[in-house]
Image 1 (cartoon, rainbow, N blue to C red):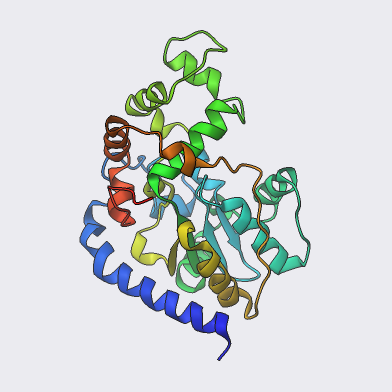
Image 2: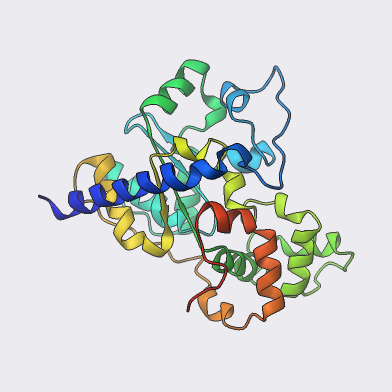
Length: 278
């Protein structure tokens, strides 16, 4: 048997056990701290069925739908989503993307988004498409978001957070202050530090596969084989890499505890340990 196919079979089998035995416990209390938005008659069909816990604009643009290959990838920022998108695109087109600018254009233009679907298409997607996502250890993910979006100021986020904290534009923001911003409600203002569970509007037991980027080198090839029925090249994108693992080692116990409290739902749903083993 093809090795990648064998790996996929093992992964999917394990994932299925995880979904059935673990996530079912939490099914009735899926969002622990962010209530779903109210439905309205003008909502697109997808959001009538699956209201978002966050502003729809934060979620909608991160759900990539491929009618040609019948998959839906729920992108989680700071969880290798550029590598995953680049690899999906290469598998579809044989075009290898080399820059973040190219990746961002593909993210914006190549896939369909849920608000573009009618009810029949939503039902078809939920019934017959392969729905997957990849999560990341919440400690590493929030440190990576801070290093990339606050310290490097990618996307110009720092001044808006400074204003929220009543600091002048151009002010430095410490990690302690960043956590204070999240604790005061800022967690729901941006997908890069939103709870991972809140970026996934459909019930977790509707996913066909939930991977972890800690296992990406094994799990992503298996997912690609499932989608394209062949071995596919992994296109690694590292433009936003931050070496969050190194910064992680400098956290004190108080910061650990605050991160855990903010992201407790992610730790529980995706089975990450509270104590991080280096």
